[in-house]
Length: 177
Image (cartoon, rainbow, N blue to C red):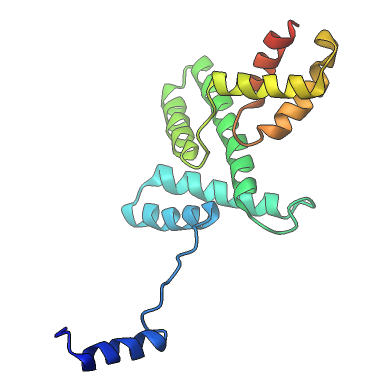
C-alpha cells in the first residue's frame, strides 16, 4: 500500500462491496465438537476416544428422540447424557475392581476422564453452600421438613453445574437433618 488517494479509494470501494466485512464465527456446540473429535480420534487411531465418543453420540441420538428433546441435540442434552455416562463409568469401575478386573477398570477410568472434558466445571462446596443458603432464604423452610422444597429449588437453580448428591449433602447439613 502506497498511501496514494487512488489506493485509498480502491480500499473504500472493496470495503463497500463487503469483501472486507467483519466475519463473526459462531460458537461451536458440544455436539459439533464431539463429531470433530471423533474424526480426529479415527485419524489418530485412538480406540479409547473413538469408542467413547461413538457411544456418547449414539446415546445422544437416542436421547434426542425422547419426547422432551423434540429431536434436537443442544448443549444441555449433551451435558445431561454425559453426566449419566460418567456415572455409569464410576459404577463400572467399582464393579470391576470388586471383581479383580483392574484392566477393565483402567479402561473405564480413561473413558470417564475423556467424557469429563465435555462437562462444565463443577462448583466448589463453598459455591454450592452459598447458592443453597440463598434458596433457603427464599423458600424459608420449617426445619428439616422443608428439605424437599429446598432440594427442588436448589437443584433447578444449580442444574448442570453441581451434582445432586453434593447439593443434598450441603442442604442436609444446613437444615440440620
